[in-house]
Image 1 (cartoon, rainbow, N blue to C red):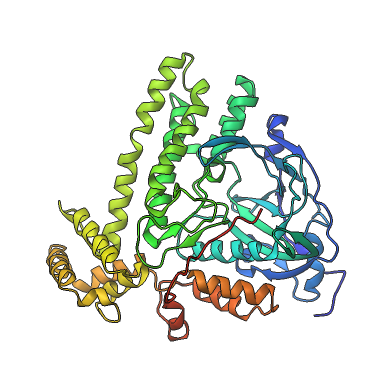
Image 2: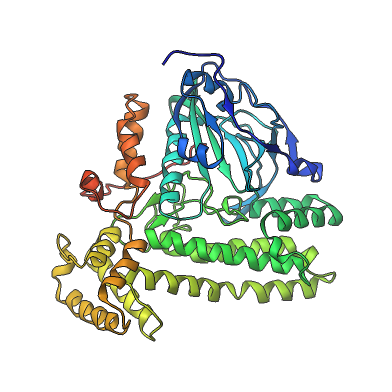
Length: 490
């Protein structure tokens, strides 16, 4: 496509509330220019949602804006400071390779952070290069948009721009910048940092800012810090139950990767489970299985306990009372998550109302799936269609006994069976980002410069609950995971 220097990305409505906070929370910094930026993929659907306009001609010149070489008029770039418990150990972190351009506001008042990821060195880079590989940024684009299609709260991806410069990891790789869109980039780790580095009055300013921006319904609460803790806990209980619903494994659930507003953030070593196994781990750095599939609810509570600890100075004037109030709140997370889990399992099995053995019915199915190496996604999807074929588990006598129990339970719905199937088909996707398909698409895009497999997956992930013959081959799990590992892009 012919270049045009007049091409513009229009429609930005910038605001910069974060820079009105105490200065220790951020550093002003500009993106480091790259040599030959070129858009690889642009999310026109998201652009429309944000009321932005990409002009169709000369789209290559948009690379200058989306790489950070040319700042949009009104942008005021910063890198934010935060800490994080990484695999249980606290570290000083911050935006080491990401720069926040500002907040874009729609006409209806909806606000998004706009961040360039892979945009160069910042004061928080910790001897890193501040860059990202094309493969890892395309991966985040693909998986975050798949999560959005699955209906799971997530950051979004507006564009990936190739930098034209190499990035050195274990070998030279193509560099890229991702434009990430989020409700905000405030994390549990941001509160860890604020509690250690801000004065108490400044910490209160920050807390009030977060409440006003994300939880206005709790403004004026008798104890704002406790109210915020409980609001974040509820967001996380819902989010983790949704991860579990589709077999998603985040892979690096450090406190700096837990968003206060309840969005899935940072898609480094994440992956989706094929064969059901609660101890499934794909991340190469999670050698002890800390962030395995079944551990995710427990890790969420651990992270929230760290969040509660950071809030102690604002919970009560006396440390002893603050600790007791925080403990009492954190102990309710198991109940919160339990409710979300029961909601999720009833949707997956089409169960209406509540019966005493609903959870055991779900758990017993998982035990059979583990025993017979059943595919997590396909097993639930086939149950939701009433067509039980092509899965060996369906031929087992133990499963047939379970099936009788489940069908008996469905009769207690006192609704037509078709309604149960309809509920299930909204909870059990046909298509997920199968790891081998994602890797194949990324290799084609980065090694062969062929984007067709990538776009095919994007199209399928846009509506993952609808069966289409066109995407039927995307439903098949690999013959073997073959020791599949995912890697952090830094």
